[in-house]
Length: 495
Image (cartoon, rainbow, N blue to C red; front, side, top):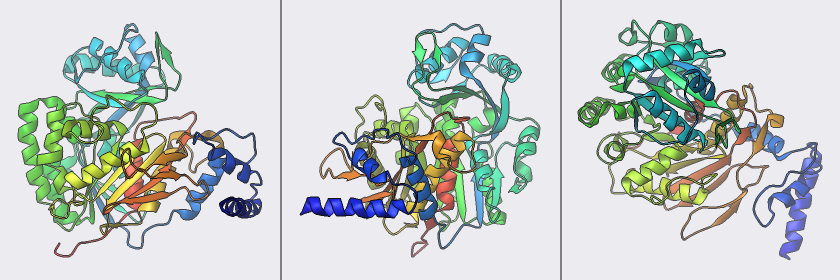
């Protein structure tokens, strides 16, 4: 009986897709639900990538109630994007073994840390403590053939993405120098107190999938970021940002740049973090705050953000696989024993950590007074949005919109080009690494999978990974910005 029903369902799918020009899809469906849960590559004119892309376009809809004014702060800079291997060779550095450094103090520290992350294909960001050496490296980077200048800093990148929606008014507060101001979208409002005489520069060392330097070979394309950034390093514009909100009257606040303080030393960040919390606490309670996290290495600092300081007073956070695992390691959460993810992060393990964050540091605990109700997780192969029930709407569309923009922006195209992307996510996965461990299967025709654990709902969608990405910087910021555009916040009674 079950077999007959399955055959009937596949025949129905076949008929439906014949009308859409995809006669081979039922065969593909049989392939993608193979025993190992992995997709084979059918030689066909109609690919799963096309099916998923078309499904996104039909399923993604804007929320009933949309944002009209969004305030973004507080890290902004000019990014100098350059070939990582090429620049290090120009600095007369030889390839060798990798080693991670929490703070870069020399060119050798830079080389070792770059190699450490390149061989893992992982993104990272570090502070370079020696101002003079950094300036010499920055000059070499700017003069390197093919070097490009872009808007940089999470806040500025999120602001730029939001400004692509004409109906949105965007305020950006951060250290905005002449070059950055020139590059910003005309629609972005910059308060006078944000304008600086000089720009802050960040160096972005990119590498391609399969690129080799000595014995190191990158498993996937990514980038390594470093800077000697004092203004962003102490979040010097945070108070200016909060003060500007009374006049601007936003209905959403997006905050980033906390990771920049980590390299300033414990004494400074302890004091400055308290001041930051006091400033953020002045924001009206009925305005949701999204916090965009970035690469960090100091567990005490992460714990301060997570347990005692910032996380309980924000409504939403955005983060990637490295930040998620480090957050769990710092706080003694699920799977904290893992040194690093092996390949594509396991969906069940990611789900466990997301649930732990919302139960221990958010509103999933009914007795908690924390504001945190939403976590947007993104990794190369898939995205997951986890929300406490009753606080957010349209989250399925939000997570799919984030995945769609990751696919198009990485390839440098206005829309997803199915010929330039590939599906890398396992098409069978579990909702948890422990009990209850439910197995789910991705349906390409409806590429949104949802499940619940307690009072937390999870929405998961695959990413169509760009085969030859043109630029990896700012993808996380674009993903979070797009996800927020498609999100609807439900004001709670008593706010």
